[in-house]
Structure formats: structure tokens, C-alpha cells
Image (tube, rainbow, N blue to C red; front, top):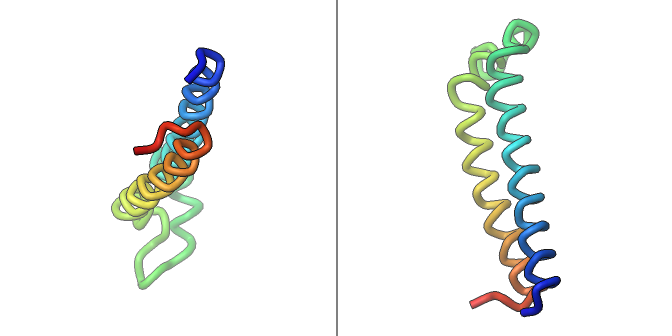
Length: 84
């Protein structure tokens, strides 16, 4: 792999990680802490949505983001021919 190709690979990898961590931050911190009062006006399964985000939502989103990262990195690895 050439140096330019390697730099592009890591740049796209870091961009993907930054985007996914930003989503997790928004879900866990913004929805679970900052907007909890506004989200508590909505009920899911009898529980306030703000409580749900703080207790369960950020964990579910994080697990989903792990799978998104896995599939995106497989595609990126194939694109740059560094897959196993």
C-alpha cells in the first residue's frame, strides 16, 4: 500500500470513528442529560423517554454503532485492499 493510500485509509477510518462517537455522545449526553426534561414528556412502554435514554437508550445505540463500525470497516478494508 502506498503512503498516500495509507493516509487516506486512516483519514477515512478516523472520520468514521469521529462520526459514530458523535452520534453516541448526542444520544447519551444530550438526550440523556441535557434534554431529559423535554424528552420526559414522551412515554415509551410507560416510562419517560428521557429516563429511557439515560438508562437503556445509550447502551442500545452504542451496541448498534459497534455493528455499524464493523460493517463500514469491512467495506473500507475491501476498498483499500487491506482485508484479511
